[in-house]
Image 1 (spheres, one colour):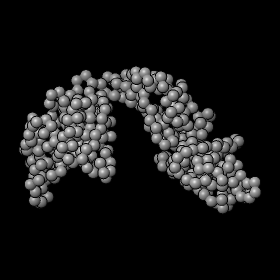
Image 2 (tube, rainbow, N blue to C red; image 1 turned 45 degrees about the vertical axis):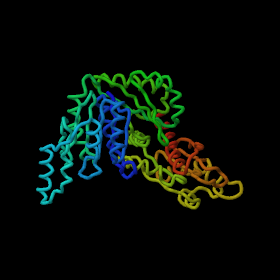
Image 3 (cartoon, rainbow, N blue to C red; image 1 turned 180 degrees about the vertical axis):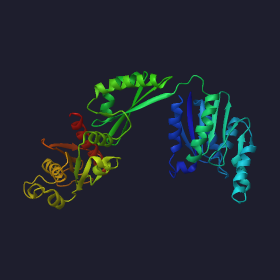
Image 4 (cartoon, rainbow, N blue to C red; image 1 turned 30 degrees about the horizontal axis):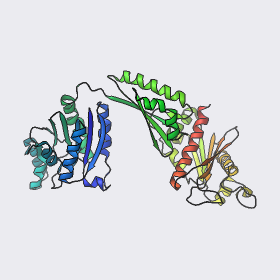
Length: 417
């Protein structure tokens, strides 16, 4: 069955509130075997809301509406749905008692508009609100299933879990199987190249299906399947994961939705290894990403943000001749990246030392272009490695991608052992 989620509220369109309800409902519906093909956001306008409902009914079997069921005149969701269905509204006595009890218990006078929170559509099933006042609604008409939920997540979630889910299972779901998914995480490869490596699997659209996703510095692949049992689903998901891993073993770092820094923290902690870092152009972003992971104190000893040449010399003993003067390679160079990594490792006595130096932009520096970055990886008892990176994009993009690229090189080193 196909579902559409309609989030109601002008504040959503203005960006004043983040639509977390759609994310929650999509995930929960998928677990029930219901595919969400569309998400709509519409303001507090009777005509536009009714049109959104009628359009959704043409392309979905199940419509879930969130928000717009409070006491004020711009709370129009039930009115619009009733109009679209050709039905009337009436006061639900148990819901009205709950509203009245709320005001009486607090010694407050109930204004007449609060009666709107007890309205339900004729022929519908009222959905009691366990954490608020506005009653929800569930109704079937002409083979379509409509559910109206509150906007506040603290009210919407328990109503959906405890009221709407059982109603859907009883009225809408017969032979639907739940959807099971797993997320594979990749580093050191772009979305386009990853897609090219997996193109035949993506285009096959067989069971399981796979779909790539990208965000700054990392790429994910979601594998999804429908199955009657979790064991059956796991068997199919693991078989597809094995195919993908065989093609991209040097890039697939996790089969759960975690950042690469979490994988590194876990690997180094398990092996009793330690890490330190020296950062110039990233200004502490590398260290922040590591220390944001719970348990990183077991493996991360510390680091230095050596933004200026003076700090590079004074704290990490980078020779002045490398930084300034005729023939000096400059702060943005493989030579300086190498010294920084080695020195921070030596100063902290860690097993690994990382370094980043580059031009984050937007302008050039030392006659070198924005996006040019050198990262160093020093390991106890091994030769230090330096990697030249070239990025496009704005300043924040260059900084973040530098961090992710360096962490990828560290991960490769760790899994090679």
